[in-house]
Image 1 (tube, rainbow, N blue to C red):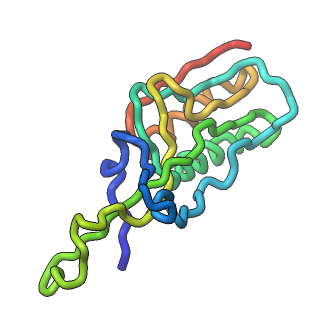
Image 2 (image 1 turned 180 degrees about the horizontal axis):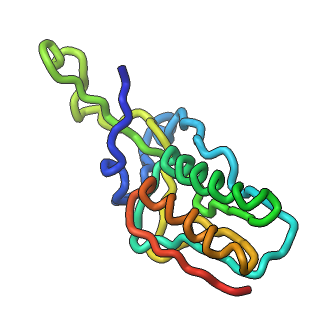
Image 3 (image 1 turned 90 degrees about the vertical axis):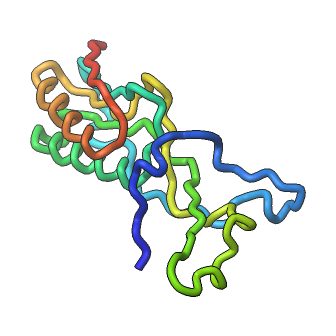
Length: 172
């Protein structure tokens, strides 16, 4: 059964996951998996709010799409306790980076079933969003009386995504 690799395998961005080749048919990734992130804007999209609370990254990092969706769900569920018209949640990172994996077999007779590193481009296994240092991952717009609730909702997202984050409150 196929298992998902640990997030630490993908969190450090090293270089862009593209392939340049002299042969045109081998110069791109043929199949890209569908992103698990369902929505990027939630809550009340039309009203203007007094304050903006941002979840800001402390380092350059790469976050997989399933981690983004998990964090989004936790924050959205906590913010819904305030009512759907009292906030505007925005996920500002888009998973566009294709993650690839060269599956290696181990055990008896595995040497006859795999190509090793001779064809090691790998298959696409997921998507990731690249974040730079001090870039915004989530932003929540609320009024003054809901700042503490929104900040605690963003704090719940931190264990679900790799890296270090800070919470910043701004007045509009």
